[in-house]
Amino acid sequence: MNLAVIGTGYVGLVTGACLADVGNRVTCVDRDQAKLAMLHAGQIPIHEPGLADVVTRNLQAERLSFTDDLATAVRDADLVFIAVGTPPREDGSADLQHVLAASREIGDAIERDTVVVVKSTVPVGTCDKVLDTLRAALRARGASWQVSVASNPEFLKEGNAVDDFQRPDRIVIGTDDSQALRLLRALYAPYNRNRDRLIDMDVRSSEFTKYASNAMLATRISLMNELSQLAEKLGADIEAVRHGTGADPRIGPNFLYAGAGYGGSCFPKDVQALAHMATEHGVPADMLNSVQTVNERQKRVLFDKVSRHLGTRLAGSTVAIWGLAFKPNTDDVREAPSLALIRDLLAAGARVRAYDPVASGNARREIPDPALEIVSRANLACEGADVLVVVTEWREFKSPDFRWLAKTLQQPAIFDGRNLYEPDYVEECGLRYYGIGRAA
Ligand code: UGA
Image (cartoon, rainbow, N blue to C red; front, top):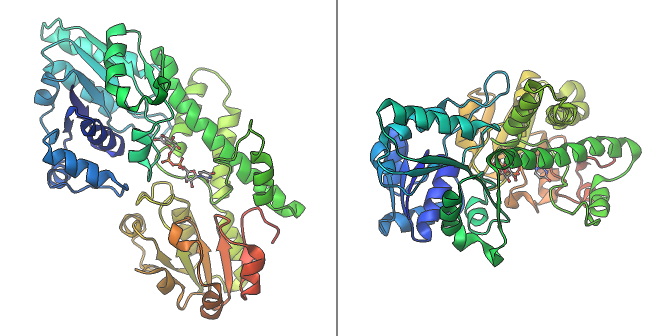
């Protein structure tokens, strides 16, 4: 098929490259010239394992191309994907200006009947607005092409996006147009394992499914984080509790990890947008609001522990931080707990020496303060530091040399924001251990 993908952010780029990889001709459209220049050269603006290979392979095979010319890209397309950003507005609602601008441009350009597929995460009802916008643009130039709009939300996880795209647990398609459904079924056939991964439904339910999924996942995390606070007070270990509760198949073992709070470009924004939708429709959003409150609180937990440990020595101390990305295998620091921690430490008069395998540049842009020193190796962060805080569970942090740390840190203590270590063993090595939800 001939496909156009509008927006080469993380969703658009992964979608375009992976769909080219199974034989489609894909034109990805973006306005950002600097980004286009990188992509033409096979360079990827984000750190996403495996993505550069897929992009390069398909550029070479001439199945994938990048352009700023939306009109030409959509003119010949069997399907046009909208994958532009929907950033949060001040009031928490999703900003649809990019989605609607793309819809107008598509309506101005198409020269045949076209199916437009919305991949961006959009509030329920947006596909109807996209359809109205397309039709208005067509009417304005006296064109009478048939257009329909399908919802096809994305469930990729950063750091695992290529694999998630190639082996999805579900492909959700919302449409009331049987021809559009047929096209999308054919497009996704290579990924429809056992022919049972594709779930079709009406447009609004599909739009809602995306928010409901993220809200459900964020709720699990906030509940575990709240339970972890209580576990500490009760002298229980949240890791044992997680193991014990997750063994119930109704609960399941995944996504039950207490930690430093959830971050990223999805959960915070989507839970907020869903709460906004609820409020707008007069539906109480108590659960969704609590999920956010608990998460904001959780992002302060590591700071509180460090500050209790160091007491009056906090101002003037140096804190080593391992991990700046909001999760491993990505360079994304949006809403990362590390940033909240660093800002609190700097405000309290501490200095920070931080290390991350790939997210340093992005973190530096967020916090240009010279009291934050970013170093190029994990051990360097600890030299001359008082204590160590582990915020992101990168693989290289999983089995450090605790005895070396005990000798190197001035006030030997490790704050394990992801419960990676055995508390007894760490203490045996001469460090004070603080985890999340483990008796301190
Ligand atoms: C999330 C969803 O998992 C994807 O299904 C969805 O497609 C995506 O949002 C999106 O809406 O685009 P992502 O934000 O990339 O994906 O990352 P996750 O792996 O879900 O992690 C989100 C946050 O939750 C991270 O800060 C992570 O550290 C935290 N987390 C995750 C926990 O604190 N505990 C857990 O048990 C799991």
